[in-house]
Length: 146
Image (tube, rainbow, N blue to C red; front, side):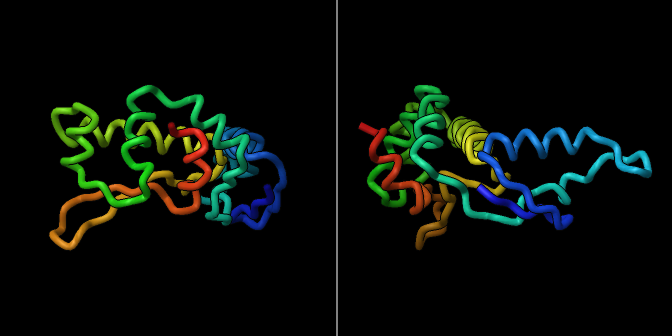
């Protein structure tokens, strides 16, 4: 994967290597004694690298509840928050939000992309919050979701 950092530096490596590089650069002081600002280290590239090996590694890091959430979304259709909450046996939307936040952290670590998302948040025609798997990952994850 190639990425151009906001400060103009072009780097190449695996998503894991890029994530490590960004973390290390953030710790390193510049000439004026300040550390790099986070915004200047984010890759300009916004497309996540969804190679099969990354999807497999991602799937293996998910908890059983996080996997259950993805299984609920595997049809590719929008699922309302309330329906998702009931399917997962959760009391409220905060529990679902916690699962989604964990999934997003795993996705961003595996892809090395701080903007990557696996689950999209949408609104239906009645302004109800809905969730849907990102189209670019739906087919890839169907291989792992039974």
